[in-house]
Length: 592
Image 1 (cartoon, helix red, strand yellow):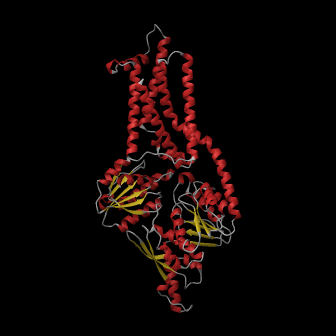
Image 2 (tube, one colour):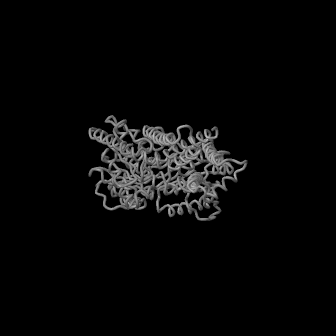
Image 3 (spheres, one colour):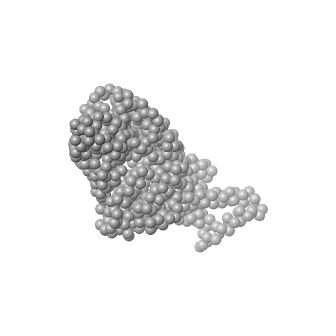
């Protein structure tokens, strides 16, 4: 019986590990069925092409066929056994040391769970063991999961107690092993069923909190709301705006990436009040209508639209739908509100009167260094029309020079028309976010000198690209918070401009939730990687055409630990490594 006890212990360890990792995945996907389906479609290794699942299925089917064969042989007493029974009996008698059938089965199952246990031990050792954050919902899921499996076990034991009151027959041991394998195989389905069953109850509670937060916001008279939406750059823009406005006003913001309707509702209920001047609200969405819901809670008066690309297009369905969803922020603004929009965004009519567009055309003399960026920002002190700020920089300068030459406004063009900005951030892609923030701060009453001083105090946070000291005096660039196509290209541009004389490596697991656009987007990124990098470690299931462009070596490897070892073996003082996307952060953690 000791071998049965060992199998039971290993089974429970494996079941616990799989349950934790699968609940973690649901939690990361915010318990949304649409995001979960998208994830499963992109990463089929979760449930398919998995060696352990295939092995378990084979063992389960083998045991089931064996039991059927035994029943057939009992029914045909005195008759010649059929081919299936003969084959199974012959196969089992091949076991060495004259093992009985049950011993052979037990050792096969033991070997299976021992291998899975070694995998779990390896994950713990490599710090790649996935587990959810402990919340009320996670605890409830586990309690219900335990209850379901206890009920199944109770029914099984009761069944065999009825048919044999003296002892558990040998056949029941085989059936018990079948039950364990069955539970192991259906565990993801059981967890998903539990989550989908309890979701309506939590959604009811969610709606109650959203309604409560909406009522609270309606009762506030002083605080004004600034909404930020877009496919990328939301969190960094929020942090920049908070850092600048806090120099002059009392400001509250949504924390981290809590940008869903319930995340905003919690922030409103716990932090927002009339003791603040402004509430900076980051707004995220995966489908049309979700930003509108957030706007109905907070009623924004200023809206910043950072940019739009293919991010989460598998959930939106198309770029057109993405654009429509993001513009729900602009549509929710009052007539006298302010819309600040990335000039790259092509959109239909915008009904709001006050609108500004930002782009790199508003500045000149961009200089990218390893630790900071510099650029010249043109003021409008010599211009009568605010719209001129939105025009092409060269057109603006020509206008200024024309005015100076004619002296029509009695102005002189000197250095005071240009303010030099220095930002302690990595990569010029942050400049667009800073420009939107400068425009917002100016609109709210801050002068450019105040804004300039505040901008120079900005430091990279964990949500932004960071420079770290790597092994052997190498340089690590951590851009693993999240990934989108524009962000990846911008990070590669930074690598190319700031580290010209370095050996450049990238660790890139790919971008999720791109749907049918995935191959197209990744091929574009791989093309740019080939132009910039010397070595590229491509992880995950992204298709990658064989190429050797500019001597860039592409290494396809899914194992995070192996990638970390390969990176470690190639580090020196002339090496820079870009860790791009969330999975790359795990590799970096193993490398430091």
